[in-house]
Length: 105
Image (cartoon, rainbow, N blue to C red; front, top):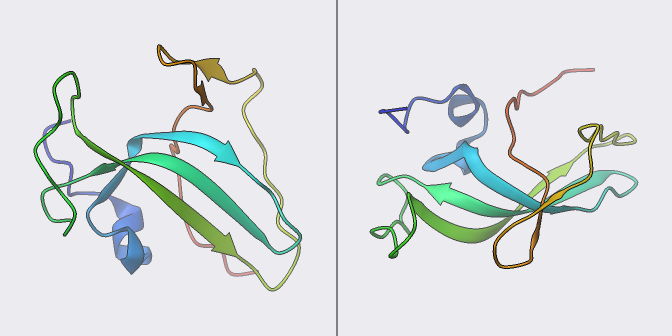
């Protein structure tokens, strides 16, 4: 992955400009009646206003973030089949967001 700025969701969701979800880590998901907040260790690209050089030991610029999806109707979340992994710091990690597209119902 040489070009972190070429992502399809970035064009569909302006608020994700400068964020690379594929290598961001989902730390928590809290499904609610009409919304779904994701707590992330988000990868910021150089285009993001909060971008900085990666810290020692980091591959990318990671920053804690909350991505909240809202809906006028009930939200359904389908997690992966396995339990979350535990990283070297002891935090749970649900993996990353591989696909993210808007849907008109």
